[in-house]
Image 1 (cartoon, rainbow, N blue to C red):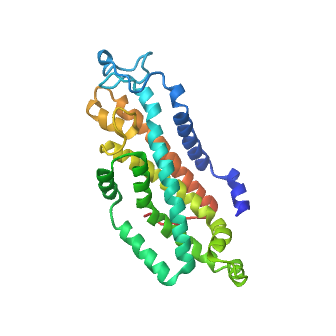
Image 2: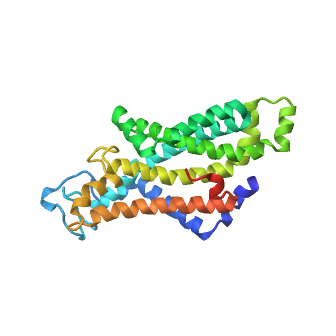
Length: 281
């Protein structure tokens, strides 16, 4: 496993391009307060729907806000929620999947039935229901999105852990009298780390789209906070007058999602974790 991780320097060009896209987007989001030429929420009614110029490279929206500044700042909310939600979903899902695979029998059956019940509910519908009841604060969004994706991660990890549990070193650990959690932590999880890494990259791309979808539907970030999904929703009616207000956040969002997908596919091929093993759920 360590050798395979060290071999990341030999990944394909597509994977490197994907990592560059993701790294660039994250770097811009981190440096947004210093890169944005204007206050992204400052309005100027006299300069509304202005075209591209030296003062405003991408023009302004219907409130006179600088589109470039809002696009630069717009990824911060989506990236924050996506990072926290994806990390939570992958960590919790990995633990649940590993426990289900280790104990098997009725424990595995009970966990699987619960996971199937959660998976039966459409993700967007479940999120809209939770946000409508508990609000759209960052903790609520993170927990809601994590709950939606934990079952899918758990099922993938459960499938990856089963062959490891049948290996000789796990049998030897059980024969030494080691307890279940140390065996899972020391023997199982390190040997499915490749699957977990690929799963993280793949789920992250879906979570980014889901967060932006919520903002587009009005259940994400509150105006006038800049956000890519909210920008698309606000500026779509002015697409023919000021197209940059809609196109710029779409391009930024696409850059991040394409980068994550390229990274996930490249890492999957590098580690030998194909889509059939991961399961597109």
